[in-house]
Length: 258
Image (cartoon, rainbow, N blue to C red; front, side, top):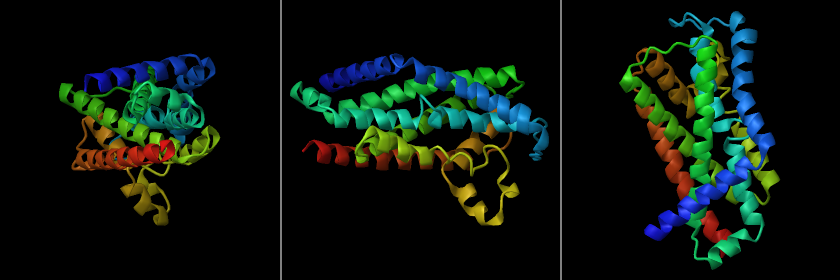
């Protein structure tokens, strides 16, 4: 157990260093939350009426942008994790790790943990930008802690999904293409407009996809609105996606390295 933890910590440090040596991706990742928040608040916000007791559009959209940037943002999101895993599998570095008795669990956990660290940093930036443009949460200590825990669960689930995609893809480019489609998942949700404003044929998917309960939970917890059963539904989605992705990643890693 001690060796596994040491190996995982080493792999986390390696993944973080690799990210820091790609300044273009870091700059893009840091600029994306700023641009998205400004675009939705100042360009689209004046034309969107969300209703439901949200006086200002920034209060409605901030949780959605938070989830979008935390898990899917360019530079720090799912695409980077998937491409990093695919790049490792394409080269000979995995053979080198195996000769040093570093297991696949440590390699994958390193990528996932580094992804969580990177995305948490992006999340803090999103909060800062939201405050700067007028977002004023009314959550107490419990609401803040619940929101942080939910965001951590979402980021972890998305990171494991990305790791599995990286193992499934034959190249980093293919992995980036797969996660490109995942990046659209926040848009057909309640992130930017109420689901009721969408075409009827889209309601079923928008209401029951994984991110809608996450966003509704964050919105309610941060703004002091009733959340109902949304947090439990969101946690169930996160737990299910994480369990399936971990199992799939383990099986794919064994197949790729056998």
